[in-house]
Length: 337
Image 1 (cartoon, one colour):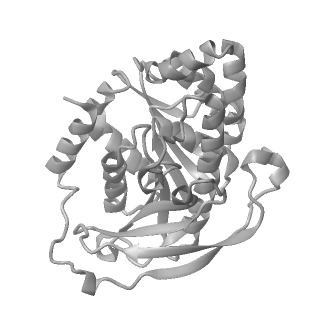
Image 2 (image 1 turned 45 degrees about the horizontal axis):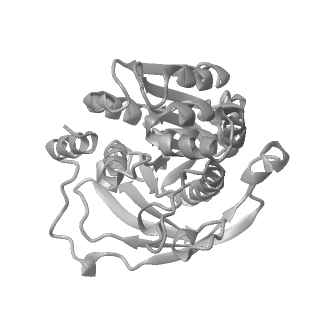
Image 3 (image 1 turned 180 degrees about the vertical axis):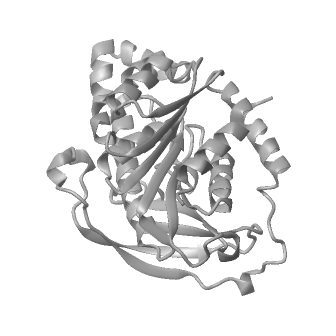
């Protein structure tokens, strides 16, 4: 069974995709707008220049969704990206906010942890939403962030991707993703129902790699959970069958393997992993991963201070068989008492 189909089928069995059909737009609160003040939590000189954000404010819009699950309130959140590209649709960050209904939280009225959730390379939004719903059902607020050139951020007139066949374009795309995520963390921390001392980040595969990179630049992320991710991004990109076209084009253009690795070094989470040693962290990986080889995972793990790591007896895609285990570990990790 296809990887995506596995997750959707299991999600249906779990009942997490059910919605309350009695809800109507008339019953929804009106869209809310406001401003968030972004304040760096540390000296920006410690952050590479490409990932810096100085103090500033940004506007946001939050629109509630009519069809909501029985346990979770869902809204769409948008705000401007700190990076302005030539494609106007990509200059707005689109998020989905999954907030536990107060009556579903054991300690109603208290602030609860918040987590930024990132999707995989293929842009499998149902998979990200599944984890968000599970987190919300356990009492953790989850903000699903759509990365550059995904979903409504993808232009229709040209083929444009965050991870491009040209690694130099991938560096540009990842930089925008990290800055978008830093703003997302500030938005989440500003919510009155969220404990701003318990902000976390979670991602799978590309989302996990990007989550590691963003956490290294944004100290608001005190809880970091990475699934099917690793470091040594040059090796991951060079050896992965999914980016064969990029490797072929690079070589045909006269580039070398060493130059390819050097281009990707600025967005390699292994380059800054020392900054993760102060965070509470969990890694969940596949022992036979054919996309993110175990040595690349171990490189990030060692440089991050050898946090707790779980190995599934699976490959990158066959790890879908461990969905229940993964959901349980992730929700348990972020469910701070």
